[in-house]
Length: 160
Image (tube, rainbow, N blue to C red; front, side, top):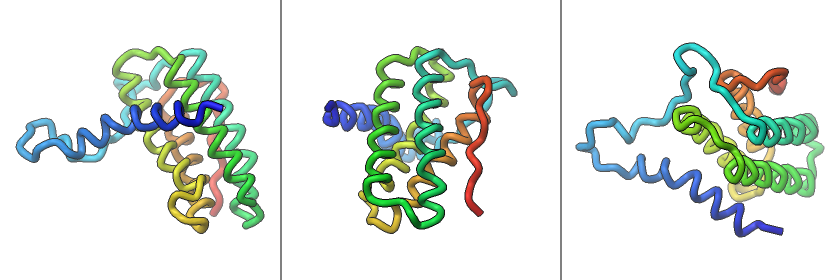
């Protein structure tokens, strides 16, 4: 199991965001403002095979867990399995995905949201936040689908 690698990759992905947030207020790029995902001149960003594979696997895992979480029937093992699978796929994407730098920057915003959901799913924000973590990952995946050209992608139905 490569869990230390996942932690390193997660830290590497989130470090640019922490650095931006910590930039001096006088910096003229408005770095303290939250990152907002954008389309590529009105079009979805191009993806590659590793990104397609990793996001598809995350989509499947969330679709399996979200109904259980919404019904209050998800167990710790369900949340742990989801957190492990999503972390594994993020690590795969980071290691193998080769996007245009602008598309990559947009993907980092989505991955940051996914990793925030993983923290909650793994119980790092308390047991009651685990179901909300599943929803956060699902929302991030839906954002991905609206901004990246992943043919056949279907939005994850969100609980009411």
